[in-house]
Image (cartoon, rainbow, N blue to C red; front, side):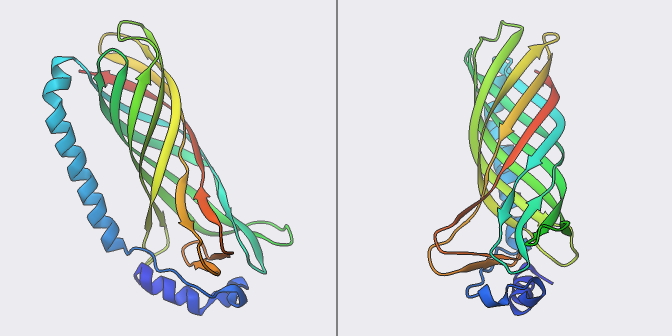
Length: 249
């Protein structure tokens, strides 16, 4: 079953969540095939960017590769249903890889991929125990500008970062596709040099994922199995803290 087929199925069977009376508009999300094409384009763009900038970065000894791991705190979305009041994405482990190069003494540009898997629960209106609906795989593809407070010669380099990209959200249910949404990010941390080519990196980041904006009537998203009134802007908030080893070339 494709995501479009799943959307049609949910729109025709919303009574199992008690929201059939609220469903007036159903939105079809991008298919899994469209996401695969976008993912391929993003990876190709990252490869071209890395190859194009490598000579300059190498000459300045500015290439940095950082594998990292940590924890991610996830938010949720309020629902307008007769049975459930919101849907919550649980917290989980976060891991990934970043690659970038330094610009001058204080600047830098990075491309980062990170992954998180967490259970997703719907919370009953009566306040009972949450019900698991699926596990959610989250893959972020973000580009950052990094501003270091100290120059390269300092052993400890606090930094701030900001950027944007896309996040792919995919439930681990057979036959159900994923959706991809715009994401922006803001964070900071510190790099501590252990040697000329190795550093410890600690970082915290906030990255809200834009889900949708309601402009007319009531909107129902089969991916989240919920409905929202006119005028709502929906974000899935994510906050993560990670530690990694930075390899410099």
